[in-house]
Amino acid sequence: MTQAWLVLTGPDGRDVAAPSEAQLAAALAEVYSGKLAGADGAPGSAVLRFGYDDGLMYEMEVSSGGAVRFAEWSDRDCEIALATPRTMTVSQPADALQLWRLMAQRQVAKIRSQPWLGDD
Image 1 (cartoon, rainbow, N blue to C red):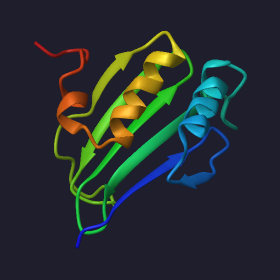
Image 2 (image 1 turned 30 degrees about the horizontal axis):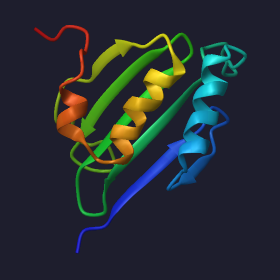
Image 3 (image 1 turned 30 degrees about the vertical axis):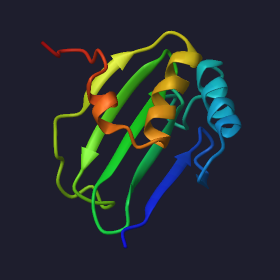
Image 4 (image 1 turned 120 degrees about the vertical axis):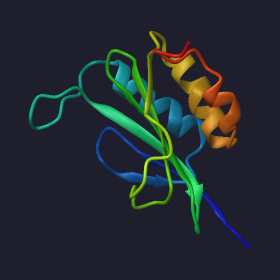
């Protein structure tokens, strides 16, 4: 049977398997605080990924300033993109948390139906 998994890579670069909603909210609070920056001075970000042991993987990255990027992959190794990455900007951490809740619930259709930039 295919097993689903969920992993949060926080702003500090550490992975948390099956994160709680409190852990998701804390990671977003850190990102939105604007105090983070990578070694190269790039804005800090956090990524939530979910997928299946034998196939598909989805990832949603939230960066400081509220930039959100959603990508769909054929597998965990990101070998084949299944669609052009979608982007949007969400100004409030609560809105980003709602998107991450959809990820945690594996609601891909609802995620795809969000108002992504460039959608007609």
